[in-house]
Image 1: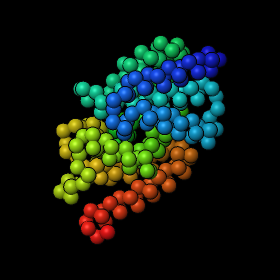
Image 2: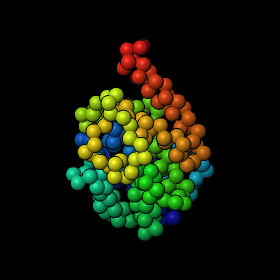
Image 3: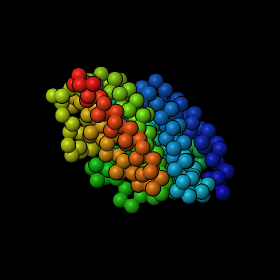
Image 4: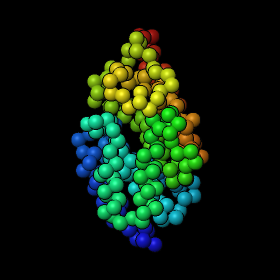
Length: 228
C-alpha cells in the first residue's frame, strides 16, 4: 500500500531529477531517452500482464533513473549510483524495493551481459526495463541515437580500415581510448540486441526495429561505396 500511495510523488520527483541530471547531454542519452524507456517499459509490462502497483513502480522508477549515473558521462568513466541511491532514500521507498531498483540499474547494461556479469535469473521487472532500454537502442530511434552519440565524440561515420571488434569485454565496451566508428556500433552491439530480448513482448517488437536497421546499414554501405 505504501509503495502504491507514494507512486505519484516518487515518479514526479524522478522525472524532475532526470531533467536536472541529464540536462546538457547529447540527445542519445538525454532525459527524452529516459522518458521513452519509461513509456516502453510500462507498455511492455501491460503486455506481459504485470499489474501489481508496487512492481509497476519498480519498473517505472528503474526505467526513468537507469542512465542518471551512466559511466559515459562521468569524469572517471565509472558508473555513479550515488545520486540515484540518495534519491531513493529521500522518496521513502521500502528497503527491498530500493535494492531491487538499484540491482536492475546496475545489472541491465549490455556490457554486463557480454561479460557474463548480468543477473543470472532476472525478475520480470528487470527483463521489462532491460528490454525497453534495448528497444530504444534499435530501429529508427536507435539509428538516430547511434549517430548522435558518435557525432558528440567526433567519431567517423565509417572507416573501412577500422573493423568491428569481436568478443567485446566489459572493459572494451567502456573504453574511451579505442578509436571506433559509428557504423561499427551496429555490428558490435545493435544487431545483437534482438536475440538478447527477454520478454515475449520485447522479442516481438524487436523484430521490426531490427529489420529496419538491417535495411539502413545495407543502404549505407551501398551509398558509401558509390554503387547506389
